[in-house]
Length: 531
Image (cartoon, rainbow, N blue to C red; front, side, top):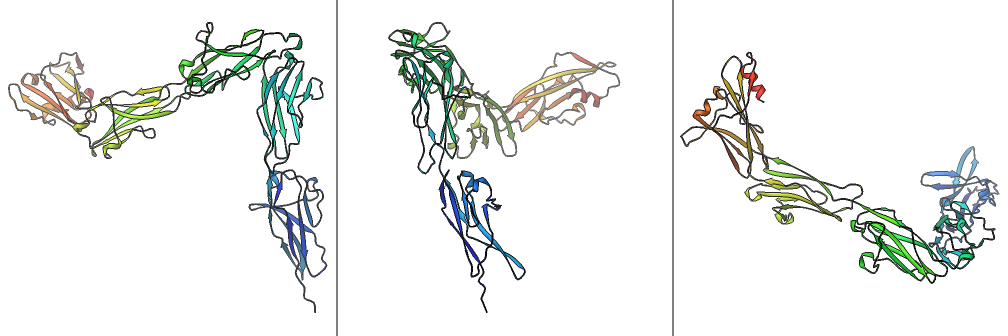
């Protein structure tokens, strides 16, 4: 009797392979019998399982017991496994190997910025590239001009290969200006750098000439206030340039020299080989026309003129207020926002009577008043809070102040209208109270006293002679069905808020136009009208 040993499978191979190299996994099958079973290769990513078709060109060289990935790329970083299936006693089952997690090493090449030098009869574009450790070598280099592939077999071009460090454009002319780009590629990917040759290089028959220079603004002719501005130049000069000077004009006609050694222009360079003008924090004072004057032994020339426009504005502020009567609290709602071209907000704060409020030192009675929450909340409002308040927001351009909100006694104004019926001589007078108050008023009361007396008594707004009157906020109202009441009495309104009260007297018949009413209009209709 023989004991049948079930088959097993195991795979071996490197777990780290450089991008572009060959990855190889070998399978070993252990069994007591001489089985010849097909091996299925799989790759896993998370829960996704894919059967590998080893007949594809990518896996050329693979066999039943060996998986070959001819040129590994980043997309091949999977978990790999082999399995075999067999049938025994009518039952099918699958045996799987261990898993190898493949890591693909390597990064794209590094290509430094392109640089240009000029000689008497040539223009040279210098380049330099490298690859990091464990990264595949550069396989290919391509040159393009204005997005068109250069014909490197043209005798006009010298160098420009993987083993060179420059591309030489011989006998340059106006046809050679444009945008040149260099692309280097390895098994991981490609990287591209470009440079503009905006002006024609000096041809050999005109080498005894003044320098040629072109300037441009980065990021563009319109920049945001407080942003970084850089004006770069491309210089063509034979013989070599000897001096460069940046100039500015307000009107585009009269140009004055700029001292680039000032801290305002930190990072600038007036070297004729690589002149650039840097304005680290652009302001409205920098608006104007700029040019570069450059000279060599044969003469002086100036660049094209560029105009720098600076945009931006102060923060916008909106304010309003609300009063919580029950909790004796005032909230000044502050809104601060910017236009799209404005610099960020640096600070937000509230002031009282011209002095900045110390919110942190209020013991929690005050809150808000910062960039994240411009609103100001005042709890337990009392007489000590009386004053003029405003919100200030600051950005790089400057500070902007809101309108003033004044905490104080209510401001009370009374307007009146006289009405009479067409079929009678009786007049009705309605006094409306208009209240402006921060905090909002919490109490209003009408009073009456006879002329010549000192004591005022609360007015019964429900009495027949005052029907239609009300003490209710926000519009207390006094209705006198007989104007002669004002000959005998003085009426008084008292309006109160958290910090004080205001008293307003009515003692004379108002001299205003009469409003005639229809004969059928009764008193209730009159009260609706005076609303």
